[in-house]
Length: 400
Ligand SMILES: Nc1ncnc2c1ncn2[C@@H]1O[C@H](COP(=O)(O)OP(=O)(O)OP(=O)(O)O)[C@@H](O)[C@H]1O
Ligand SMILES: [Mg+2]
Image (cartoon, rainbow, N blue to C red; front, side, top):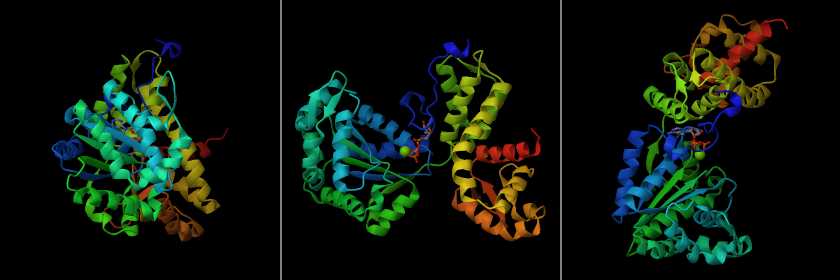
């Protein structure tokens, strides 16, 4: 095999993972599927999926949506609210998501399109074209009558055996800063709970913990409506499973040590797994990932992340010369992910020492470091970022 005849990369950096390549998350899946089952039996549920950036919130939501459709006869709507700032935007994006949903059951999509025909422009060969003017004009009505809108949709689908709706509101970063969003969500849940026949609705919000806090700040009672599902870094077995599955899907073999290395550097972060996996996939020339391919892939991935994240966000934020020289000294110290503040301090000059504390606080704020369990201990959040800083420091030493 050579690079030119390579198939499709089974890695999806920057996109939710397709259901076939989804791995792990057993505990979370069980928790959510219990809630989904309740909805199937008619009881509304509300979940908040939290976890840091890139940990796999959208992927898990997408996986559960397809699970709920197949196993529990719910109709799934996954709304990406990025760019939405008002409740009218939420309404518009909801209708869009309903119409643009890939037809998992063609008969369902026919009914959905009939129900929302006034928002459809001319029919295209693939999918639908949305009539944005009509949709925009109607968006205040839809947003005020959001629950009736969902109810009507379900009514249309009941003949097809659909028992309820799973509504995922994802990428709430922008909208959650608008105080009306917290009120809107609380209103939706309460209105439904108090109605004589509650709509079987699985409401799922996805966002980092700060967003949930922000909503609670805007409207305290939001705290009580959600069950929280927290997504944590993946276990080693889950990562192994992922790489094996992904490479196997393209008939590529991987040796044991190379697999360990890819897992080691991904350090539980699904986002990094995809970046490292993709780099390795393109480096491999013979359909077998060996130690050398893995190492090159890891370095390539570290440089990629380093250029995008460390250079653009971290080094720019730390402009002073002292900060950069502290960074180099820290980079070259022989530790894996965590270090003691006092150990690094020993090798610093007097002016560097004076700035060291500030330096650490700023790296914490930039999410490069976090505090460890022991007093004075700091831990790198990403092993690839740690590697990049080391590579950079070494590079500065080697004359060109
Ligand atoms: N369970 C999983 N199995 C395989 N890959 C996954 C899994 N979960 C997430 N990923 C991959 O990890 C990356 C990040 O996932 P995703 O976009 O779902 O995270 P997120 O928490 O929604 O991120 P953001 O905070 O940026 O919205 C993607 O490349 C995705 O394909
Ligand atoms: Mg996401």
